[in-house]
Image 1: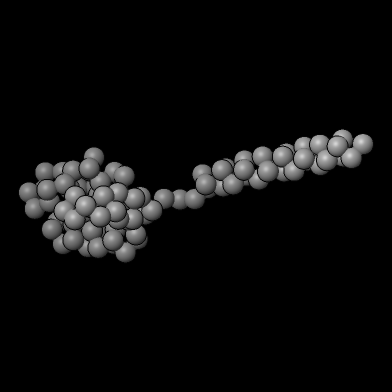
Image 2: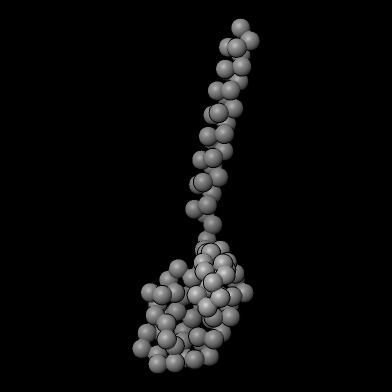
Length: 96
C-alpha cells in the first residue's frame, strides 16, 4: 500500500513539474528582445555592415569576438554604442 501512495505522489509531482516547465517555456515568448535595427545603412559608404549582418544582434546573444577569440555576450550598453556609432556615420538605427 505504501508503494501505491508513493507512486501516486510521484505522479502528482511529475505532473506539477511538467506544468511548471510548460509555464516557464511559454513565458519566454512574452519576453521582448532588444535588438539593433537600422533602417538606412544599405548603400551608406561610411558603414561597412548590411542589415542582414546585424539582424540577430540582440541583447543576450552569445558569440565569439573574431578579433580576440573570446566569448562575448551582447549587452544593451554594447548595442547602444553601435547605435551611436552608426547614427554618427549617417545611419538611422535604434534599439527595438
